[in-house]
Length: 275
Length: 90
Image (cartoon, rainbow over all chains, first blue to last red; front, side, top):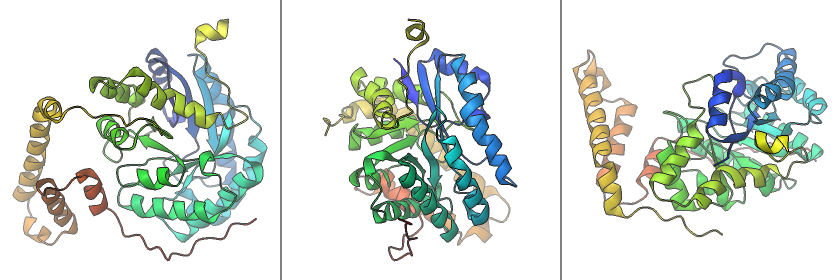
């Protein structure tokens, strides 16, 4: 079965990971801009990063028949530096016409500070002005519930926001309904220790259904599994869920959300590309 | 709205997961033992993290449903609905 990993940081992964993902049926990925593991010292560092996301990584993915898409922003952790954030946000429009950019993301909150909220809103302002999709990072661990509610507050407070064009990512048992009940898409991240396991993600699907929900690995430079989506598929199969249900979550749903971007191209396998 | 995705029958879940649950319980028990054997354990008497772990364990024993959601909330910070939302620039 073909699948899409809608959130993975391939810049931090080796080329062998692309190979193995393709062997497991991955046909497309989307890579949000994120924290590099250190705070960058200047906007020029982000310019290089955006160049990597929009020019270099798509070529590396294409070697394995995987379509690579990206999202641009300054992440919540570095958003604490408001002046740097504003400089980076001003760079984003020149990259928005690159063919693999799906929108603004992953924006959000980290420690739920005032500065993070200001920069989150300024990213929303940019998304509204440029009519872009939005991908949202929700905080980790004890900050998640509070931060997710603050994010939903800001989204609902902005009358330009169309919930169906926003994905609230990293939802778990205590936050999934805030996203779905307010009309947003949501993503469950299959990540060791700090987020969902494949089994808990399958439990959540059994509780909330399959509408407007997807799963991702968020594979990055931390201990993480770029094949987490196939692990979820296996867990669903073990429980006897039909292939049609699995396909909806790992392929059809991401396509339905991403299709709202004018720069989305349907993923094809290598064979279909040759035709 | 799609049709609900039905979970496995309860007996089947228990059959499939019994050894896994036993293993995870032992893992928690062994970790608590390790904390108990360590130097300075008495200084952890009022540690808020241990308090939360104990409360989490009590959630497992009560008769309620949505245990995972309850434990998530137990380990979450308070939300204040009156926080100052930044103004959008229309």
